[in-house]
Amino acid sequence: MKKIGLWFLVTILFCLLVVPAQAQEWSWKKAAEPYQGQTVYILVNFHPDIEATLPIYKQFEEETGIKVQFDLLVRRQMDIKAETELAAETGAYDLMHMGLWKTARYARRNWAEPLQKYINDPSLTGPDFDLDDFVYNALRALTDKDEQILGLPWSTETGLIYYRTDLYEKYGIPGPPKTFAEMEDICKKVYTKDIPSIALRSVRGYGINMWSFGRYGGSFGGSYFDDSMRPTVNTEEWIKATTFYAGLNNKYGPSGIGAYKHYELVQDFAQGQLVMIEDAGPWGKTFNDSEKSKVVGKWKAAMLTKGPVKHQFSHYTHGLMIPRVAQHKEAAWLFLQYMTSKEFQLKRALLFGGGSVTRTSTLEDPRYAITFDFGDWGGINAASLKIASAVENPYFVPYNLPEYKEIGDTLGIALQNIITGDQTPQKALDSANEVILGILQEAGYVGKPSSQFGF
Image 1 (tube, helix red, strand yellow):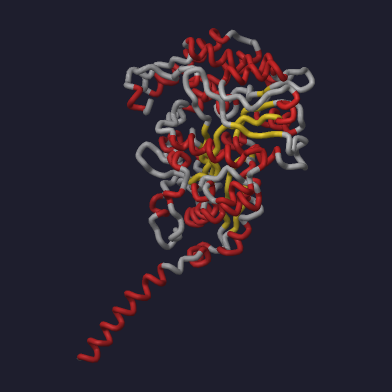
Image 2 (spheres, one colour):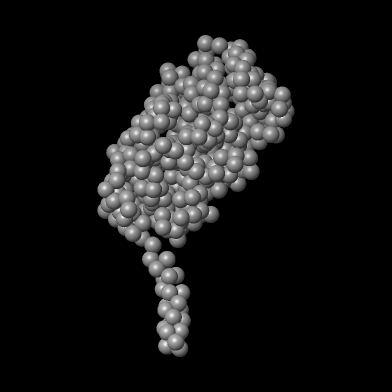
């Protein structure tokens, strides 16, 4: 009996020593064993950081035996297809785009699979995952009001100003604008018909002109709602904001500016046909690519300008979520974890120029600053993301309402009509305010305290 007892104790001690060691042996290959041969189908948008992802993901396939197939569409088409597929519960995709404004919308419709159970599963999630390493507001943007994580971020960005250093020097401009007033003053000084001063997004849409304009209303002191959730987008502050934004485009922008999305203004700047633009962070890679740009070495990035009342930053997070009806959830989680991991984000940035990362460890890596030192982009982008992530309430644009898509589209229509001159600012915003009031009434928000919704 003594020998049996001693053998039993030795066995237990051995198990206690071995189990932790085995737990540390987590690997992509081992985690993926039950799912080898599956294909993860992904619906996502064309984006510089997706472009930088494509050369790397094959390594995941080799390590896991799981195949990955991307379906890439432009944003508007992708959003329409996504909602069509999700509403019909087709299960055609295992990962789908999840953006800042989609979180509340998808949560209400029960379209997205909560991720905590995958995060907590040690057989599916590696010990280096580190949820706390994500840029704070990037992860927060994909977390619903009940604190459920519905997606993981693969790109997070703020707006930046891109300006031509050679033309600034030609006109004696000492540096980029820091305020709206300085921006307009520079536009006056550098404008020519051949090379206009500036271009801002004009085409209507919650994800088009409203992305870049979103910060302007608040910068002039405006708010979307009053204390009882009635819309206030036709006040004096909004009149000033839309008049200023439209004025920059109309006075100092290119011909046909009313039809400009981000694609047109990025293309014009890259071809040397604009002095300055204000748009999303990831374009630095495009402007530094000699195959796509004629202004390599002739531009720099700068932080967004301050408004007369506030200094607000545009902010957007791109992520991926697992649809509730997805066919290959575990395999999808493994790829989502891989694509947003510290190692992958650093590799994507350093080797393939995908610099709008979502990992704090990558932003703080000394190699990041060295890799992206062109045009001051790396330092400015990292500093801007730090400011955007420190914003306690990022919802000065009401992305957290499930109805934001309709609200943003309504206001985007008004803004484009102001830019094109089809309506005066007052008439366009009065009309938008009336439509938004109907949206809020139908949702049952009007009469309730705005603080209940985070405003």
